[in-house]
Image (cartoon, rainbow, N blue to C red):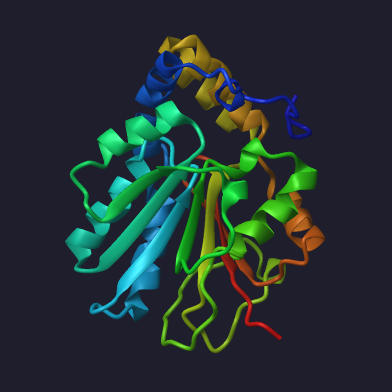
Length: 261
């Protein structure tokens, strides 16, 4: 069951995913993000990344597939606490999910939530693109193009001082950019497919709503292994990246936008 990525769609990907199902699902997703590593890898990344930030500048973050908005709120809270300025544009293509996120983010003027599909994005000037629990919704053959499209939403590379400190899963799996510069980046946070991850999710979801129980277990089956990720990146000729593993079978993929030739 876990030897290959599951190909079937989650209930939340259905066009008739109802308002009540949205509420029931995200009522469980937010605690999962809080307790089981959904937020921590992203905040860890920004703690490292911000060592080279200019405190007088506002950094533009685009969150694709923002769900209920808990990740943008966590980022805004981190920035306020750390003394940095961010502007977060958060998008999702489900109208009920967007309304939920707008309510969740209403006390954060630095966050704007829009209904928009990723495919409608036509290039932009974001410093960072976030895609949390987003990539596993796509089939293998779609993923290289999805990642390339996300990279296209980043601003043009500019020279700027930046400090980066993170270790790859394997040094040979990525090409580090030296000297380090403050390149725009796509940050993907998602699930590693593992029997223990599936068991933990199966047990945690026992008391959840039927929709969340179905989708949570299926999402692990739709997760990735490290070799699969490396192969998909190679298929897309994406070579400038970092790949990290984090608590409770999460990975963080950090894609650098390459300078135009």
